[in-house]
Image (cartoon, rainbow, N blue to C red; front, side):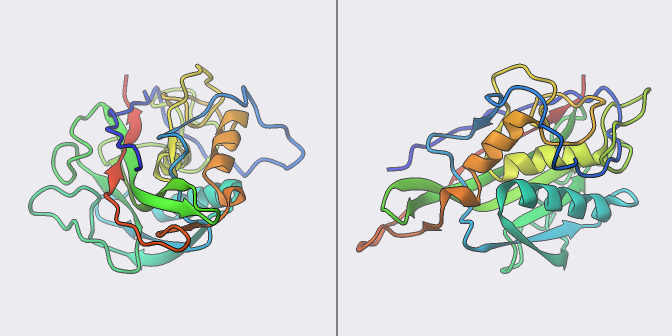
Amino acid sequence: MLRRRLAAVLAVAVAGCLAAAPAPASATAAAGDRKAYATWDTPAPRWNPCAVIGYRFNPARAPKGALADVKGAIRRISSATGLRFAYRGTTSAVPRAKHGYNADYPTDTQLVIAWVYPGKQSEWLTQNSLAGMAGPTWRTGYTTKGAENGMINWAGVVLNANIKLTGGFGAGPRYGWQGTRGQLLMHELGHAVGLDHPAIHDTKQIMYGTMTRKKAVWGAGDLTGLKLVGKAQGCLRTEPPGASASALDVGAGGGFTLP
């Protein structure tokens, strides 16, 4: 049986805006400790890399230029994991929506990214000190050899509409909120594909619990973790070879907080 996991709210402090930066050159070595990563469980729950992940963008409350940064962050996480994402368009859905807001994902969609006001649209984002929250749910899945492995089937990302971050993926401003919208999106999408905050204190990692002025480029630990939840681990299936299985969804969530 797949172990249950009750995830604590994971926080990352924002000390400024996140800035825009191009993807790193392939010749540049990833920074930091390659062991600075963590997953939601062991073995690491992950998406089936042999299926396409449909995602949608909720434009309500989103800042100008948000969709370009969403697509940029998706490209970066797809490149690091080998997972395939398909943009399905806009939606009114809100991950973990509160009463009065649309919680229903379209049938072709497994991931929704939305901006919300703390305590209003989503049960996930309850405090103004949180810059964002994200996470997946997973069920019991099986590798092609029949071993149990959590298989993610749903994920959401909610970002604080009150926090005005610099767009893009660069180093961010010297004053004000540290980091950029791109760094925040990469971090939250890291949660959505199966990564937790690392126990090792390494500010060079995007999955480090606090946003900093660094460029939004995956660190060595990020890349190690993303490989563990990516295409390199092989396909997943809903049933073990030669048998049927029933499963219960398990969830987790993590995000960034303000200091």
